[in-house]
Image (cartoon, rainbow, N blue to C red; front, side):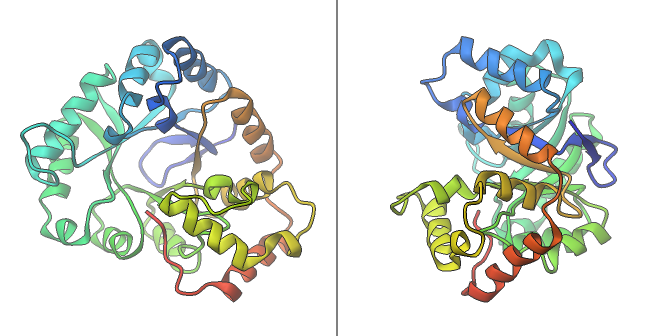
Length: 295
């Protein structure tokens, strides 16, 4: 698996990352979680991304991968969910980092994101200072932000973050024209989230969830299945994002090893032909109706 520098953080991450949200699914047994996580590493994927909000995910990573901690880059997200502590406060960030260290049975976290933190809270500064203090204390390596739109713009301009995680897909291209170049200029690492856009091309009816529903609407509006007929859109979508200049890794979540293996094969095929890449981007621009990044 190809690895790339994550900005100037000093970390190298695999072109495909593993999103561990699905480990919160109680239908996934402990045995299945252990097998999946270990096979992720065995296949060469070295970025594992989770969050406090993903329930069992952090605990299962600690339970099943603590013995292999030196083999992967560990990314999580904080800002909320600490009993007795108000969300989005200095104390909540510190407690969230400490809780993640305990849950995942490690001494240091590689990347810690403020998880979709509101703009006014970012501007007040204390949550960013909290992450910076945790970095100075040796509890984390990279201060990061996960989010989009005006909050992402503020993050770039602040010059206080080493990396970001943001939505980029065939249905979510608002970052391509300006933000990716700005992130590259600032030497910030970029992790693409939702690169498959919920695989809305597989769905005949509109999904009920907010983001997938919005992506489905965009997919219908763009008509890419008519523009590029008989395409394997899982493959094209991953190749479209995974090889964009400035994107270090694209994080995809799954409960099934077979899906991960298919995604690895797709990414290994390299960039799309330039004509297809330009066609997908032009189709988005031609149809977009003030479409912003979806958190």
